[in-house]
Image 1 (cartoon, helix red, strand yellow):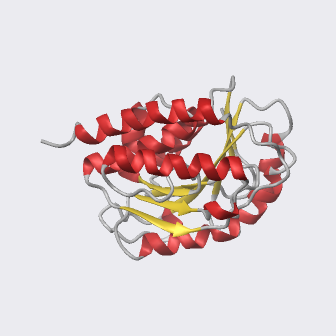
Image 2 (image 1 turned 180 degrees about the vertical axis):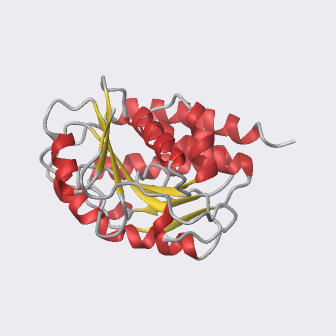
Length: 248
């Protein structure tokens, strides 16, 4: 179900499907959100200053959808809650249907600064890139997250045979080909985002990184180090299999 605000939402820009340099009119900000009523309004209000915004409300039980709509987003409702991977896929389907050439995904909890959206747009305009990932400064993270991200970087880089400086950042530009390729994925959370990298490496699609702010509030980390390590080893093995499946 889609809720359409009075303000413009996604609008297809000029046909540039063969043009590797993307203009802002061909890109939409995609925000998956679940029970983010306290934060989503500020995120959308800041993001619409740079790009049209699509919020995928993933089964929220608060006022996330209403607040996002009032702030200027087009809202896609997904019930029941299905997880971030499913929310992103739903957004990809909508963006592709509207003729968009790329989306910039960012979280609805304020950990990604919408003022940095132009960094992705500018990077995309400089040349071909199917995936542009926001690179965080691990040194500015809380200790547990710093260790988890640092170890994850080393594990995935070893698994895929290329240095991947930040693989779990959800702030990223995703091109049209990669959006289409990810519609068959059933991964969720960070595994979905890692799979994007593996698919690009398998297909030979370019990946770039741009620096972004590292923002954490006072919320308590839900990362359990040993469990996260086991999960990431499994995810890295799957990523290695995906990459190798494209090599003759």
